[in-house]
Length: 84
Image (cartoon, rainbow, N blue to C red; front, side, top):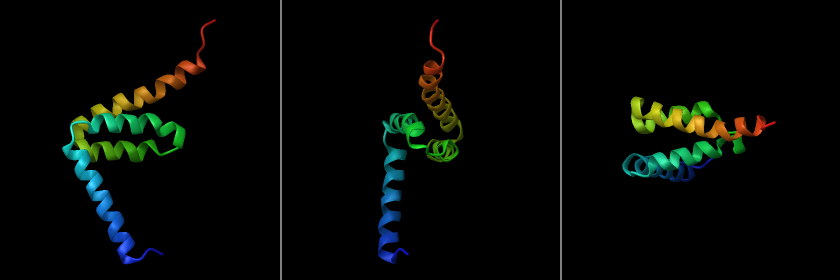
């Protein structure tokens, strides 16, 4: 079990990260980098897509998620289809 102080520190950290992501112009690039590393960590794409919508709003969240999802799938697809 977590103590109250540990939970409070973790929630403050999460709030700081959310505030930074919402205020920083480099946040979409950070989101893209996290999404590109997602296949290596087996992290859920659904959770990351929902987080994109939450952070950037419905329109920009969809735009950034589509770009990031295609960018993360492209190297895998190219690795499977080698030239003959």
